[in-house]
Image (tube, rainbow, N blue to C red; front, side, top):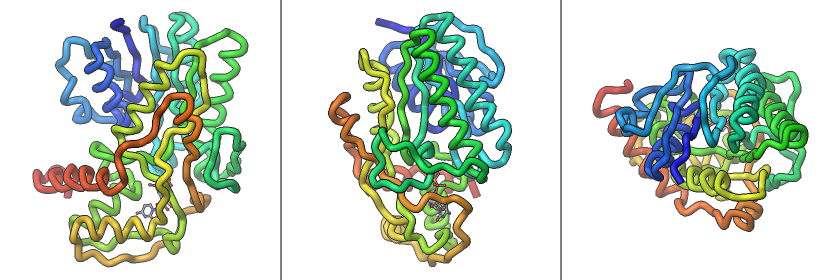
Amino acid sequence: MKKRILVTGGAGFIGSFLCESLINDGHYVICCDNFYTGSEENLKNIYNHKNFELLRHDITFPLYVEVDQIYNFACPASPIHYQNDPVQTIKTCVHGAINMLGLAKRTKARIMQASTSEIYGDPEIHPQNESYKGAVSIEGPRACYDEGKRCAETIFWDYRRQHKLDIRVIRIFNTFGPRMQPNDGRVVSNFILQALTNENITVYGKGQQTRSFCYIDDLVSGILKMMKKEEFSGPINLGNPSEISILDLANEIINLTGSKSKIIYNDLPIDDPQMRCPDISLANKVLGWSPRFDRKGGLKKTIKYFDSLLKKGLIS
Ligand code: UDP
């Protein structure tokens, strides 16, 4: 049945793919974004679609719309962006969650919170499953995001208990693909752009820290399955458990691009997690979901995307 669906952060990397999928499934989508990190360019495939509506709005302020479902995806997610204005980041997480839950309460909409692997902090168990409580710095530079997202989860559970809201909580691990922002400082976009322009590849620390990268199409399919699932609120990990060290990732991207780049070593940022890998057995069991794209396949598509931006002169 056709639904009216609000996607906050809908002009962002993940949000825009989500809006597109929902429109392709025949729904009416209201995309809300303050364009701090999102862009209209991300929406060009659906901008003029009759089932698409764009609102410039910051979710730290209340929003009054009539909807059947809400995907709360608004928040800068890359460390350089969320650390640029930490107070606004925590307001987006906390005030934003309260405002969107208030909207869900009034409209009786099912609401999904885009939580994150960052709520596990610098984890002591490996891989991370949903029952792990995390090791998060309270006052460090990542805390505005990590603790903000933890608090948002808490508020979601409280609204469920107290007001019987129909919530969904997903924990998104590192995700990559076309439409990542070229300047967001994330490892995949940095390394690909450095490799394509034969600049030095900037590995932070010794590059022994690990991450597990999920291709965007896989993530979106997991998100949609979770929203459709009845009688299950989560939390649930969504990510690709194929783990790689950052140094190995640098070499993989050099090989895939045939680049002449050299690897250089810069300081490791404060509180940079040493390892991260999702245990996705719950998603597999409850949703029948697991990623289909391997990292190399996803990287090839992402390299092609950044290469075309460079060739069109859209980034320098
Ligand atoms: N990283 C790196 N070089 C870069 C950008 C990032 O070595 O140019 C490292 C970073 O220190 C971290 C990992 O890559 O250990 C992933 O960083 P990203 O910002 O992409 O994601 P997050 O730390 O939030 O997982």
